[in-house]
Length: 438
Ligand SMILES: [Zn+2]
Image (cartoon, rainbow, N blue to C red; front, side, top):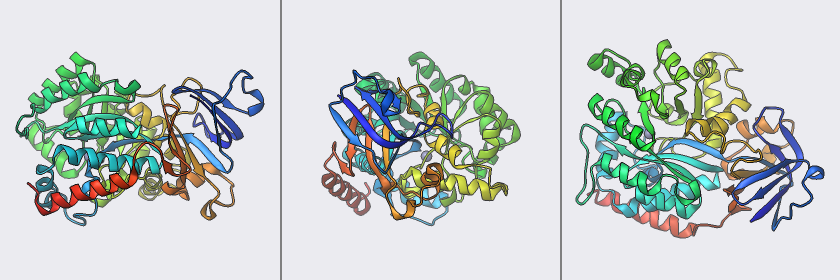
């Protein structure tokens, strides 16, 4: 399919200045073949479909670097609680009752929400990931999927493989599947649930199968204290010593960091998923993002699960990330709008090991493109589209979404899923879980 997007304000994300007013984007199959003025569009490009981008900003789709999509089922079920009480009394009992179909419908609900707010790629860690993969395939999104593994108490249901074996089988089936839209990482949950011996096995298997690793690191001050007590090291230094960072790693949170941790994360090019709203809501703290960026670290942005956010809206997440860094550092320039957008697009792509494929509007890149409707009262006048996207826009302003050159939503109509069915089925799953967790 050849598609031409016309008349949009194109934000390529190559630099703050790389904005093309009234430009065109030509898409052939899954890739972008031209971005620029219509006058220079190659004459032999014959589009089968034209998308009118008048009054729209066109930009790369957002990359949500860390979520647990099926946790949409727990949205608004238990809020305003201390972390351990929240987990032990509310979330874990419900998770123990999760069935495969819950994961399918919960993930699909997350996919619908993400498409509607402009996310085209997400990194997910949860259980029954075969079901999550089916949901991603159906929705048409791009995703990096990991089966969350607890090394200390591998909860294996009847007829299920232990988590590491499951992960290997899952990777064999899905890594690079559906035209490369799905990739797989190994998902050891965190250093406090995965002791060094378990992590050594994970590293071995990741090497053997050429997979990256998705892990939670240094989320709370309590975790850092615990690791120092047990191993005499911070979680980052412990992971470095184990050799984890010799592999491609996506590290969620990285909130509580020492100077040496920041140096390691930057030097080893660890992909960091910053989740400001979850960190605020669970009172985990504020990650030193400005310092990480200054050190040259790769920092993307994520929402975390909908039980601790409570939505998957990356525009909100960009705004929160920018505002929190300004307040935390006392410097209004600590995280400017363009940097927030980079975190939500091109840097997120790098954090997921997809740099060079997605995150920019550039010929040769995958056609993961969103159109944001600027013809809204809260987006007039139009002095600066970058500032608008970060400080004034809403997820609901996203009008049209393409992934791999396929239109997933056009003029806010979803084309790959029956939205009513998803809402109803997800609601049924959630109600059953709440009434009878197991
Ligand atoms: Zn998480």
